[in-house]
Image 1 (cartoon, rainbow, N blue to C red):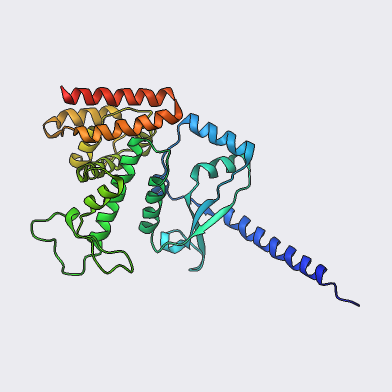
Image 2: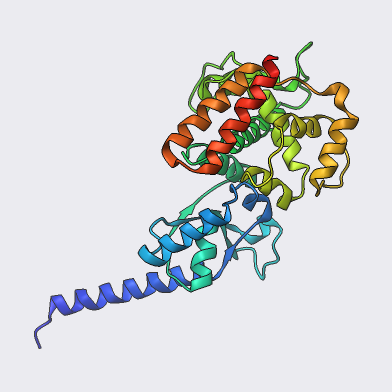
Length: 309
């Protein structure tokens, strides 16, 4: 009997595709969401989520979800054996929510990290590379990046190595990237300021802002980040500097009371930072033409005028 090469190839291809589909389906059923990482995803407003849902229902989920493949035991997740794998959702939380709610298919893209801190660094940089962030969200992620990179350098100091005399943690000389022999003479704040074209002091204020937001309950933090609640950044910065309780703040009134109590430490926001915010808001409004974006632009302009008085 003559062997039909085409039939053999077709059978092998079908078997391979079936195996890949089964593997992908198994991965999709075992996706893990970690709150610590999910909190790094900018919240969508109800309007934005509804638009995303409509787009996916109409055109399908066109952007793959990004997953981190790592042993469950490395994350403290109970596992039947040391080889059991977790597929941690890194990017696509809102898309995953929509697809799960409507039982829609989606594609996946797998990533590899050595630690959860490395995964967080990746997520922060990924968010900062996107164009649809508000000035508040940009400040938050710049601050998170500064705080993470400063923490990384502190942990990477060799045993017995002390802080340079007269220097703060943020003034450590940067550890050079892999393959780069010449260390940078810039501090973390200076390097990030150059990258984002702002003042180093703005980066440090962003760091305080991020610290302050991390001391809020997630629902309140998300409302501030998505613009539902309007509050001066200086109030959140003050929380970052002066609030040392382990209890998370869950009410806007508590922030206002703490701000009044510590008003003697409140810093005046420099004009440069406000002008940067106005510029970013103006660009955003020119693209969206949304009333909410115009209102935020007007509010920021009024705050700037008050400083000038």
